[in-house]
Length: 355
Length: 238
Image 1 (cartoon, one colour):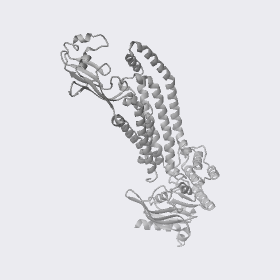
Image 2 (spheres, rainbow over the protein chains, first blue to last red; image 1 turned 30 degrees about the vertical axis):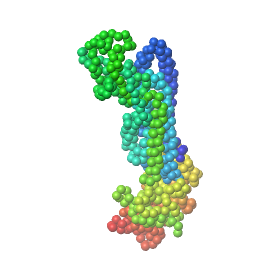
Image 3 (cartoon, rainbow over the protein chains, first blue to last red; image 1 turned 60 degrees about the horizontal axis):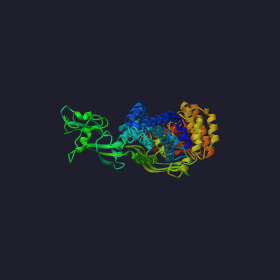
Image 4 (cartoon, each protein chain N blue to C red; image 1 turned 180 degrees about the vertical axis):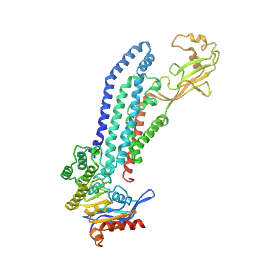
């Protein structure tokens, strides 16, 4: 049975292996150069404290490649589900070959179990190899990424570490299950894509934030969490608070971020330009630290922000710090693995009776 | 007389439509049994039930004394060649024979090789590039080389030309005699069955209309075809 499974699978396995090897070789050839550039940049920026500028420059130079690789790892499990999972049983049912193989001296259950195991392990191996290679290659970029693209950020998280293996296992078994129920290859592929995409959107939005209880904290306003301050001529002061960063926790995944006022004042912020909330603050913009003379302060200091902090304005945030990356990876991968095993169990039950 | 197949008020429903109902029939061992009936009479359903590819909706069915298709050991004793003789288009003839060897404990490799060679099936050719007749012969070779006790064939000669058809049926009769093989095959052509079968079951309107030894059915003085057609008419008229 293993022989037959391998004989049917070896074509696409060889093709996939060739592409994967080329991909890993390309990453392996360029990765050390990228790491060296990062190390040299850090060595140069630490003495004069310009590392934030270096990060922007370094990440900006490679951001397209970074996004493309992340996208590859995110799409790979879907492709596995579509092209390995959905046709696995559906194509046999469509061509009638299930009647040929099921009338050999092998039970359907064993037939399906071997197919699930062989192709499923290959799917996990491919996604794991691809995901870990990209994780390694992107290391320097992950450390210099803007907060929205940090390792814990929803889009990047799923393309790093071991999570792609969980996604691939789930997508594959999902495809097999849908194929078994729908019994036709193309509709099964379409339905697999729709379900898998829905799950991949729902998990980061609804499930992942709660896998571990978020940390909450109150932070003073500073360069890391304020995108800018501005004032209309003679009007009130506007503070633009970043919704994706908290001071002192680089790379944290910020789940909520609000600007709270002094005392028990409610934190009714308005949504500002790209990933900021804005709030007007009743402070004089014609005189004092936020007046015209405040703007003349030496670089690196901001008398106006100091004044806003003194008045009691704070960032109140709930977030998942970066050091939870691996725990959350393990939990999420475990959940997907359990889903895959559960679906596989259903397939093995259903294959016995309904046809 | 022992039976290779015993069905008792067997029925199978697809949704609300009964493909087979109240089928009570005994197929004797060591015979070549023909299952005949018009299209849509339930022949394929009965054969799939017998091969364990379908589960019955009602009734009981025992094939070689057991529930069909439950264990690998039982699967090994029953051969089944489905309608339209499905084969893997991407696999070669040699691959199919290896598939048979790998998946069947009683595989007769010399028989398979010799038969494939005699029928001119090129080992390196992909099954998808074989003619319809060659595909049928390949599927039948798999069924025979499995060395089952009961071989079930659903419309096995439909894709064969008249010459290959006669040759195949004669070969089947010889194999049945040589290995003590019981055969259950369906066809809607009585002339095919007359050549090789010694027992006939007539299925019409999803019910069994007639079952009996060919010699006994012929004893009335009428030809087998007339007897069978009369049984079908009676079924259709009701």
